[in-house]
Image 1 (tube, chains in turn purple, blue):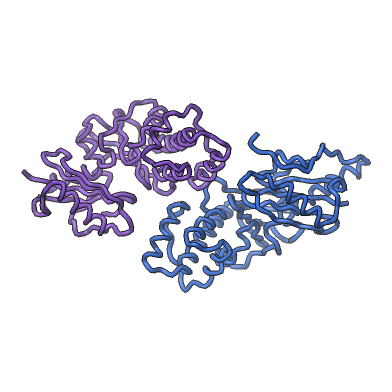
Image 2 (cartoon, rainbow over the protein chains, first blue to last red):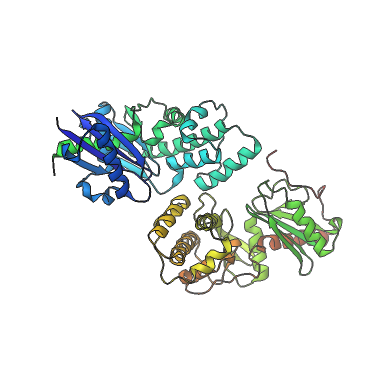
Length: 259
Length: 278
């Protein structure tokens, strides 16, 4: 059986996927660290080990993500927008709008019925719209980012940040902690702030249902809920939202064939 | 007659006592406990001036923390106070660029009055906070980074505007082996040009003065000089212009009342901590 590999070298994590019959069969995720090349080699070694395969068993590979240029040994590169569109389309063929919340950027893309991105908008100049804002606040609150989503769902009075800057937001969270504001309210406030930024991006590309949320940010159940509340529509979240671009890259590798 | 001004900024609290000239000045941290130290700073200024609290004709509070100061007679915005303070120190100034711990402002003045202004308090980039974050990331003191930046052989290009992303970029540049001086020169240039572009919206006209804590940073002064093509004026103590302006505006209020043959109406004043989140 032909096997295809997709690797998404992101600003925070490197994700690698091996597909079999277009299904996501194996994956591995590691921090990208300072050297994208080292990270991608390590991630590929690990996923091959999990799959019990050698590099020679892979028919074709595609790299994507902001670090793809640093992994030129992979050969083929495709934009993360195309890969994300392809991965989401394969998971949810009816989805036409995708919200991708990454560690350092947020994107909204429109996808057609063939899984191609027709329009997109990226916010990458300001940390306040990305997963980074949530990480900063979770660190202030001394809670694991993995637990932040579930905790935030308990919030009844999300705080309203007076600022849209992650640096000032961090100071504001520190003051609120000192005042005794519950952690869940501080977290829910961040999610609302990010949801506003997402909604602004969506306004610029247009919203067509169905809508999905992917990227590491989609692992935050609180962010998903508050974005749904803000947009007033349901959001589909794949089982492994942070792997969509890597999965899409493997699907693109299959389309392209060996280089 | 003695009047006092207190400028409660996001980072520092500044108090002055003025008679015919500056009698006393104190600068203290605003503190994490939200302006609870403002009364201490005022107390110290009065002590240094040797003037009892009740003998002060008027106290004006200004700055980000000016509301709910129980010892002030009146609040006046920092824009107005900076303009008044600068006009007193430098009568020829037409443009003020004030960069504080958490905001940056451009103010155009004519005859000591504000004619136009622009400000950024929405984004940490272009404020003193940016420099604080970078200094901390580099393990340097805030007062060291400006000095280091002017020793740079060349300027490293910093492509991120966002403070958080720039901090990360700095760390990777160091990993690449770029000298810290060059990185700092690039950062100072980036921040100065961000504020410069904002202030250009109201047209920077000479004479121009740089105030606020960031004016103490030689690297920023140098970066502004490069952008302007001439050196900006710098007050002897760049942090005090707002407080000086506040005290002067207080004196004017009292004089105006006296000229009309009225007593200046003072509120009930108590030298107590400023209350914030009530």
